[in-house]
Image 1 (spheres, each protein chain N blue to C red):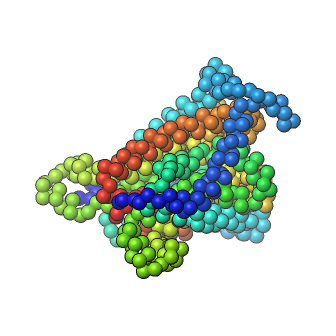
Image 2: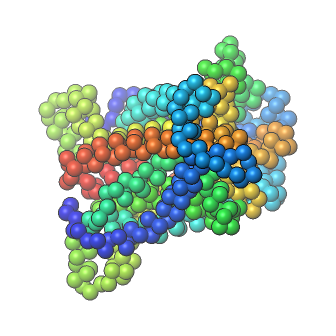
Image 3: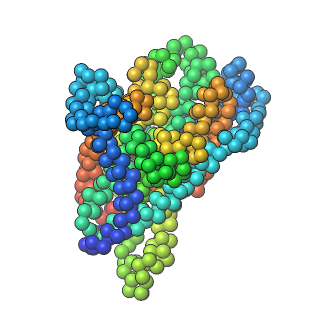
Length: 300
Length: 268
């Protein structure tokens, strides 16, 4: 699709620019401002230059140790849930019924966890996992498994990961389903005439068609898991110890808990920078993938 | 050919996995606290509506739902209103800095709420919007506006350019073309975008909680605080949770036929 050059299009985009800039640029300037200063309270600030950033990236200091540890935990968490949710989501999408009322029923149930407020998701799993009143905790305990997400690190991690799989696998599945739906029947007929195996059909037809949506799925899942806050906070409160304290939880602890504005601001900027870089990589890959097959863009 | 062997079993197992925790919440919401604590029962043996009655009669409870719905609706209207012309602009024209602008928008969709909690608090306090639905609605624009632009751009690109040209040749002015022709053509796209704005504004808690104290406090924040203050009232907590699931379930029902395409952000 050829686009015409027209600078007046800026007028169409201006409202969006203003609304987002108001919410994004102004607050970010505050953050930059704080990140260079220190305070003894009473609104008296003095210049601290790059001091906070040095501390942040030095694992031997308290701030740096906490940041890098939570960053490591967060990356591990993101890697685990991506490794589970992406293959599982593809399998679920391939398992969708073909037609009839069951399609709508499956879609609605799949989408249900996505529309539950995040702290309610946390509450659901907090209750569900309790050995005294929760079904999961009760069943595991009666099977003789010593399961307690409050005191045991491994159990806490397992709970948070299963919760995330429960919460978000549907997103991957729905995206893949959308990709699969766009494959014309003729492709399958051609494969059948060629006598292609089930696996060959998947590899040669379905996977390439899902490429684009899978990219979006991985991007969204990585980003959202990288900034996860509410769900683990409700279930484990970041514990036991600090074992499930992810970057956002650490940041809120420093910013709103201790009111260490300088440290929190420096952490925010580094955090944002990481996200910006990852975002840029995905964006470039995505636009390139789109340019290779321009005819398919925007056409159902 | 479309699907894999054993798909019925896989699908059923996964749906049960999804529904089981929700079932447990619903189950608990119809129990008395005595029954919840005393014994493990798979269904309420003495079903009670007491928990729901308390929420619907106590203003400090039900006002939370009104607050939440208010800022969600304001946010959805603002997001769609500003995103529509922008989506058209991005889809049809090339202009100075368009790609950078699009990427900048996208990156705001990904920005962690935790980063913005404190600066937003300062900003909205400074302009006297703190503890109003407007503060939360505007704050949620930071991720909903880019998302709406992204989705709508996909749908606008699906409309053939010839339609614009014909309309302009017929003497339609731009605003008239926009409202009379383009908007009806991408009505399903607008529905999907509105659904996503609703969804992400409805599920977000960190910013909503930070920017409100009394008059605009969302239900999800009231839920946690009231319960911890009065000791653990599990049945009431469960009932409040169930009531937060219902608006989402209703909205899904309306967009069920577009949901898959919507999740692909109009780009399939």
